[in-house]
Length: 210
View 1 (spheres, rainbow, N blue to C red):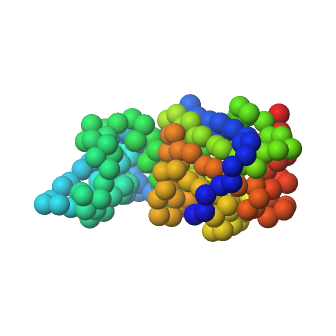
View 2: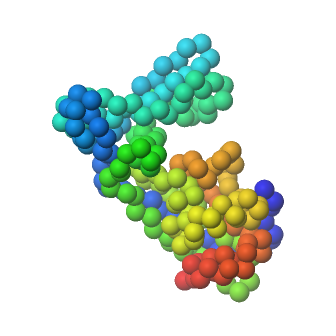
């Protein structure tokens, strides 16, 4: 993606929080009925040679039957961030929450307790503003990045995708298909207003006003 131009920047903080339990509804093979499955907050990890499989464990709240949400399948250990590997091995609650919410958004089950997205304007937009800088502060729950940005910025997802495709938006840290992945705490997004369509830039300016 192209770099952004120099100039005054508006700075926004996007907070994502949830007090709800991470749970979903799916058919329970033991109960033979649709049941509520809650995240256990624990991972099952299986490592063979240089490959790793990892799942987040959900349990039926009636019979305790287990359902495993795939986190990594036949993943090369060398391609995995050592920090994430350590978090998997010690059942890190923040990592479990992020993958738990990803599971509820996967389209194969109904989610409970959607996270709350709040936009805090730290430095409002001015006539001289050429870039908008966002920082994500995620506590407990995550959303897919394109959905989170669309909700926080009051844009359509097609507009978010267009900014990514044309290089008007820079994501840090960069990652393949980052918009389709769960948003991460501390992630930074920079938007070059001059590289956006006139309509999108106007909507962003209104959203970033004090």
